Every structure is written in C-alpha cells, then in structure tokens.
Image 1 (cartoon, rainbow, N blue to C red):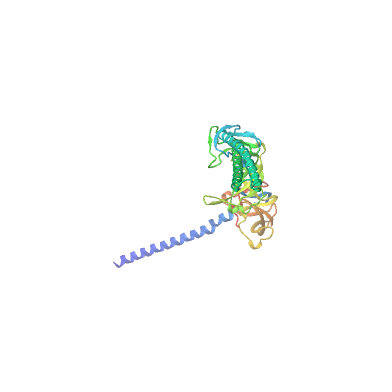
Image 2: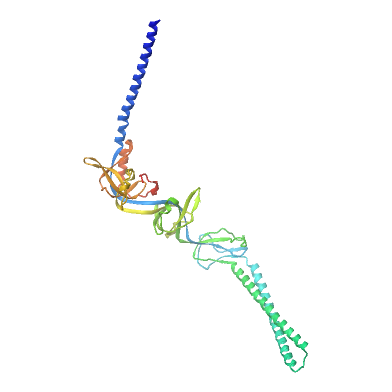
Length: 412
C-alpha cells in the first residue's frame, strides 16, 4: 500500500516538472522572437530617401458651383396674361430690347377712363371759373353801392356768400383734377409696364414662363426670364470654417471642372462672404472667384474643384512629408517650423534639425538643414521599401497639387 502511494507521488512530481519545463521553454521562445524576429522588421523599415528639388504648392481645396457674375431675373410689375415672348433661351439681347408683352387691354382702358374724366373735370373747372368771376364782379358792385346806401346789407352778404362758394368750387374741381392726373399717370405707368425690356446686355439663360400664362404681380414678382452676362463667371466655393481664416481677398486660385480635370482656370478671390451656410452641421463660407469665360466653355451650374494657393515655391528643396515625425518646437524660427530628422552620411546616421516652410499632405519644403542629393531616413513597410523608393525617384521635379494642409501626416 505504501509502495503504491510512493509511485503515485513520484508521477505527480514528474508531471509538475514537465509543465514547469514547458512554461520555461515557451517564455524563452517568446523572448527570442521579440529580440530577433520582432526587431528585424524595424531595422528593415528604415529606408533612405533622396532629397530632391521641384515645385511645391500649399493649397486649400473646396467644392464650388459656377454662376454668372452679372445677371438679372427679369420680372413683371403688373398682373395679366403673357401675350407675347420675343426671345428664346440662348438669345443675345441688348439693353432696352423688347423681351415680352403683357396683355395691355385692362391698363389701356384705365388710361382712357382717366383721360375722359380729366377732360370732363377740366370743362367743369372752366365753367366754374366763369361763374366765380361773375360772382366776384357782383360782389365788387354791391360793395360800391353799399357805400352810398344803394343796396341793403343783406344783398351785400348774399353776394359775398356766392363769391365764396364759387371760389370753393373752383378749388375743389382743381383738387379733383390733380388727383385724376396722378391716377392717370399711374395707369400710364402700368400700361408701360406691360412691355418688358432688357435691363442689360447679355444672354437669355432661363425662360420659366410661356405665352398665354397668367402672371400675378400682386403677391410676388413673377420671373419672366433671366438675362446674364456670360463673359465673366463666378465660382461660388464653399470653404470649411477650419480653412476660411487662411484665405484673403485677391488671393490667387485656380479650379477645374468635373468634365475637364486637366484644364486649370485661373482667378483671384473677389469676396469672402461673412454669413455661413450650415449643411449637415458643417459650417461653410461662400468664397467668390471671378474668371474670364473666353469661348463660353464655362456653363452655369458646373461643379468645380477649387484650389486656393496659400504659397508656392519653384526649385525648392523637397522631402516627403512622412519624414516630419519629430517636432523640435524650441528650435522654431523665422524660417519655419523645426523638425529633427535622421540623415544618411558616409559614417552612418546623423541627427539634424531642419526648418520647413510650405507643407502639403505628401511633401514639405526644406528652408535650411538639407541639400539636394542628401538622403533622409523614413520608416516604411519592408515589403514596399523598394517600390516606394522608386516612386519617390519618379516624382522628382514634379509639380505637386495636394490636398489642404490640415490633412497632412507630419506632426504639428
């Protein structure tokens, strides 16, 4: 019995020893992997990249829409049926040209009625003036006769009353004539409004109405058509609040259209509007850019990608933005922000402070600290080191058009 108990105890101790040895082996294997296999990719990820020269632009990008710089929504100031439209969409018109006509019969009748009333009042005024003159003569005669007691005091008072009434009637008719003339002038003006003329030189861009349509100008002013000057177009770009303070008037900008991303249209910022538009809780400010529309290639409503040029440098020393991972803020100066980079030398690696000017999402301009041809180290995936190095060499001296600065990768 004791022998069996001893054998069982030995087996238990043996299993415990085997488990302990297995745990030590696993720990040793993990330490070996961490110290060798895990450290090896880090050494292989450190890739030297050549410093190049080229052109760099720092830009703010935004979406926009094209619209004419000058346009007028031509409306009507009177109600009525649209009798005739003399132009069509796309027609070129001159200032003062007849565009459309409202049925004038109602307003013509009002003018004729006003003229008839005015003529009648004028006739009444002439007659009343004659009666007033006669009443005034009778008054003067009785005033002379009362001095010699030839007429009674009652007769004198009656002639005075008649003269006053006659004068009051003259003044009343004169006031009616003045009122009728004013109403007639308004009717004549409304009659004139039945003919709609072009307010400016331009092109008919929209024509939402049709002949025979009844227009009601009593509530809102109906738009008959739009006339626009298409020689100069305006891009209405919507800029995020994070970027709008970096823009200013007269800043150079360019844009491309959705249909032709290769052609750049150059312009300058005309206005930064102060009131924002909130779209899905995003605050956007309208920035207006004017551009000459030679050849009429730009159309109203086109979608544009706008690039506001914050800065541009030609023949600049350029490094990939991914090398800017170690800020040295205490070394900042008038030349730019300071970064610490590793530079490849004949004897190995050298830590160096550089100052950076323009920055984009992919590149940065080196103001001092590096020269063309030197190489800086950058961490890249081991499998992509060669391909990325080749791509970097292929991008030498290439003009860059990058996304806004706030999207870039380097540490700020």
